[in-house]
Length: 66
Image (cartoon, rainbow, N blue to C red; front, side, top):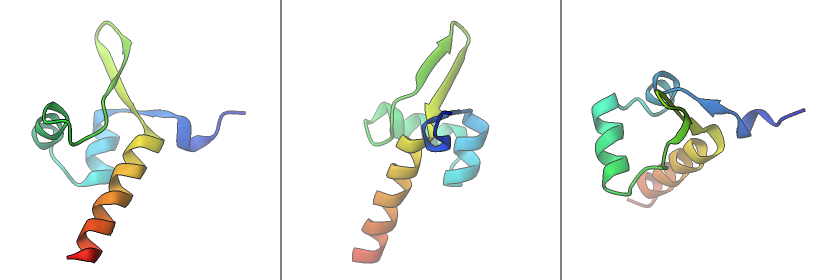
């Protein structure tokens, strides 16, 4: 059985988890500050949940250090 943390999630779920808009996600990804998307099909992309959760954790650490 696949670990839930390794599943692929949609942009809608990424936006919900991060509280960021699609545009903000795109800008961060473009600047290399957000995990890269995975191309599932020609017209479908997703993100690894584990990558997004790791990114959220690093953001929380930065906020705690400030």
